[in-house]
Length: 132
Image 1 (tube, rainbow, N blue to C red):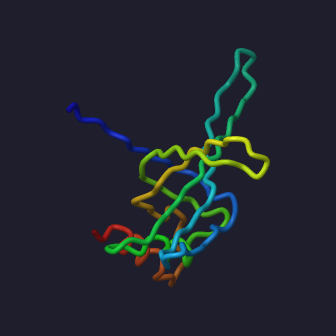
Image 2: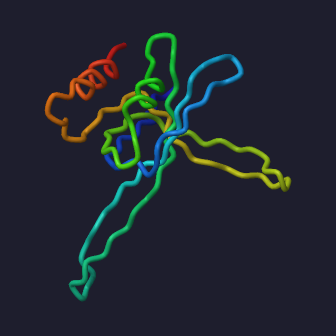
């Protein structure tokens, strides 16, 4: 069998506060939208910009409480580095049609916002998010 790789790396801003819920088994999960933008000049020299929105899903696991960290420290406007894998999921909507969603299942998140003076939480979150 050949080897393969499914890895996504994004740097962007959170669109709104993460949703924080629990599965029926009690596992915490945080979900949020992350905006990434690119800009360029068109042939007339006018600045153009395109923004893509990504759905990020963060789970607590037996070894890491990454969803809890997101719930406590990530807010609308937060600048983040997100690393994870691309996942496609299909479900049936209320009207009976099939829908496919694309999500990034995050396994590493780093807060990139400037740390306010005297704030220790920024450093703690990065240290906790790197624990294995």
